[in-house]
Image (cartoon, rainbow, N blue to C red; front, top):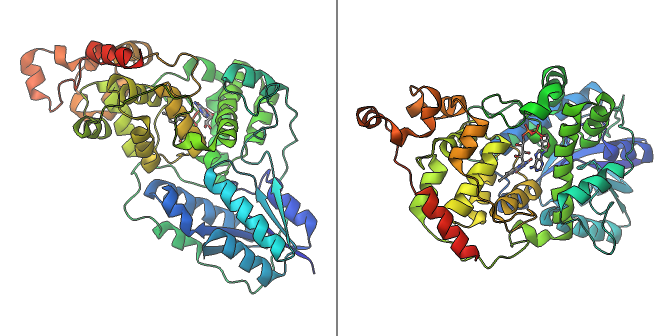
Length: 454
Ligand SMILES: Cc1cc2nc3c(=O)[nH]c(=O)nc-3n(C[C@H](O)[C@H](O)[C@H](O)COP(=O)(O)OP(=O)(O)OC[C@H]3O[C@@H](n4cnc5c(N)ncnc54)[C@H](O)[C@@H]3O)c2cc1C
């Protein structure tokens, strides 16, 4: 009987999974394999929030495969060595895997191809699994990637898309292959996950999609920036781990139509945009995409206050507290806290990006590093020197302060929009609050940044 290997990476799902489908087509039996790579710990992956979500996702995948007469095979070690070992043990001719854009994924792919070919086996890499449009599929004339979103989005909308695939009915897995217990993955990261972390996995993701389609998508265009309304999909961790397929979401949204669906598709295109930038410029995960000659300040006390959500600017602090509590932050708050760190405090974007990667359950090299660069003005923003003012942002996106009251308990008793300016409260009231004075004067921060950027 012929056997192939289907290696799960950022595609932890059974529905619309071209990798699994191709492996099933190629052979009578398939080994669905996930390798807990030793090297991932070095890339900052093994953090409690993402490990907890991953453990859920693997357990769900295993359960889904068992319903189809199969099971998930989990190995631990060097990814390439373990995949090769499993291919030999199962006598598999072909190994199927999704294409990735991070430095880690591209190195793994290159090493795997070499190792398999030297062993007389073939690697099949599948595109449009992790993104809706494969990086490099649309490019401007004479260039390898789009550096500006709007023209990218126009080309992206014209790109052809495959139809989503259904989940396979049965998956026949050869017997006798050793597997680590799926549950052991949960103990990979020391420390506890954030208390408000969502449940991981394809089943939970599809449940969330159903709820989103029922009661979120229609009003998304009007409400996506409403911080207290919390009216975005919260699908990002499911997309990050591939529990949901971007191709399927784009397809469904286009079928649904309307302003909400259009706005949602546009956000999914942002995700693809950052992936195609990183694919062409892997160094953008750590180096400035567009260097601006920055000589960042270094102030550990300011960074600590920012991380702790104690800057004295309630909207900034609310975002940072939400991050710690949920392993997730609203996009509007992410933009503000990133602008505050990199422009108002003028500290290196890499410090903020690292902190986000330690906590975000959707933490993703392409989206995180390039959004940070966008916010810092070293990336693809066409207005790199814009600075977000926390008070103006508060007036627009949290007008009566409900978001701040939710996340900054010290201020929960302050009514109305005055919650955004606690330093203006009567002194007696202010003294009762265990809340710091502003860390920095906004005008002074702005002047310093403008001077630095010339
Ligand atoms: C400084 C900073 C860091 C970020 N880090 C990450 C990260 O590590 N991982 C991550 O997935 N997103 C990141 N984002 C983008 C965005 O904030 C999140 O994708 C979004 O908040 C997730 O919430 P949602 O699923 O409810 O989004 P929705 O508003 O419902 O959008 C739907 C989907 O579109 C995608 N999307 C939306 N906005 C963006 C964007 N600006 N860039 C790329 N994709 C987007 C996401 O996959 C999201 O799930 C970052 C943004 C900033 C400003």
